[in-house]
Picture 1 (tube, one colour):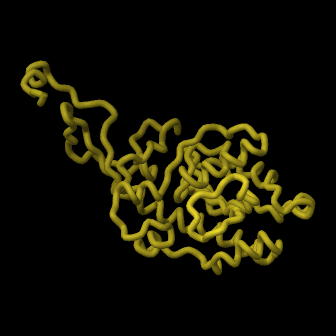
Picture 2 (cartoon, rainbow, N blue to C red):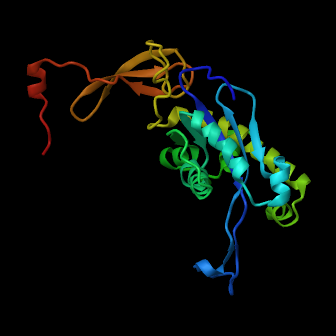
Length: 268
């Protein structure tokens, strides 16, 4: 595993899962009953990298040849390795990470009898895009193109999944791993642009042992005071990161004398 270069351990992660199979009477059927479900999803592969490192970690079902040959749907070995990555992370960045990747992995972890990894905080680039902006499309590929930081690799569409799941095509599987790795690279580029604007970005510098002010988002020490931020009843020292432009405020409010406090009336 990669060494932690700073106080915070930020992991970028992406997974690819198998599609579900169902028996239906209409392509417009809204609800599929449990007895119509022929097979459920499982994890095909994952890719990850640590912020500040260049190495990309990946694992896929077909890498464990004995297990894959016996049962190409058995994702236990893949879950073990991604569990280890998550267990080391303090923050996990991904696109739709909270609702798809994280919950999908948790579902497979518990189904395979595994315990939860150490708690980590999710930084979801899809949530940032929806909360802070009004892009026409919030897909990762669309955001990357709009922000000018690249684009996703072409998978060839549904046929790639079909080649892997129905035919166990190893060439197709290797292509999916490369696709997954590229997603991590693109997601990192998108995240590095969006985090400057994220008004709810967690302070990823907590616990690094450095008492000097640092940017909550990018970790830069080039932070300077930038006026006063007024809240509803208090004022705070405002800061700006000179590297990424992220705004922050002091954790405690500015001190006011008793007379000044009494003169600041509240609406009721």
